[in-house]
Image 1 (cartoon, rainbow, N blue to C red):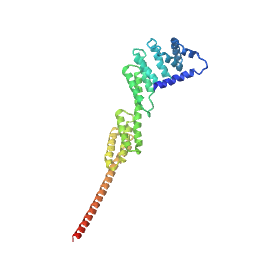
Image 2 (cartoon, rainbow, N blue to C red):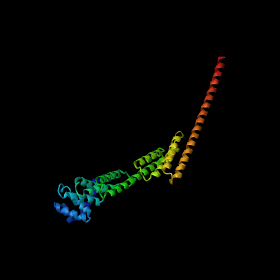
Image 3 (cartoon, rainbow, N blue to C red):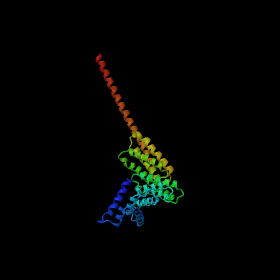
Image 4 (cartoon, rainbow, N blue to C red):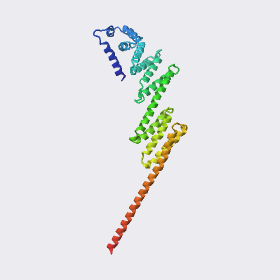
Length: 311
């Protein structure tokens, strides 16, 4: 993916330079074999913040300078040029490659950090897939492990905290989505409970903990309420257990009144479920009694008919 994005940037830059009818000084240099001059011009263009032109020159020089003394600085500038052009996907790869290739370089720590930072910049908003967010956390944590005394370590830790905050938001929103979809399929309420519990296991200090515990009670209550009467008692009891856990953890919660109402509604639900089941049992017993009575009447009639026949 990063190669495609990088290729687009390079092609765009070349296209811009090719618009003129005649070859510019830059174009002549690009097509020349004077690698030393290209290198000097690339650095000059970078410092001038003309990153598109600098990228074109650096792109052509990387292979030619491989294994030379100048390769280290060239790759450093190359990675930063991609970063300045906001091609974070390719830049992070190049920064990491630099740190791996030149571990003793004075710029190795910086490039390791910048590679992780590019992952951070590529982390999407919480509503999207968070694969890059997890990778960014891993890369930043690796930097901290490698350079615990670095001045950049505290900033890396803050970035990790920001990313974890995003993951917490994602987890909460996902669970809430299950709850919102419960009206279409009651199993979504159960899925919401599972998602809420799993999120709190993964993020023990999640900032949404209080809201999530309330939503757990709501989800379980709605799951019980929309279940068959035969299953309601157990499911309402589970909602009451979640209420007890909630009020123990947050005795002064601003949601205490709402939570208590859910508990009372669950208790009423149990009473109502038992009443419905008792009525159903009574009806079944009555039906069986009537059925038994009809059977006895039929047996009596048949017996009388047999007696008359014998006479």
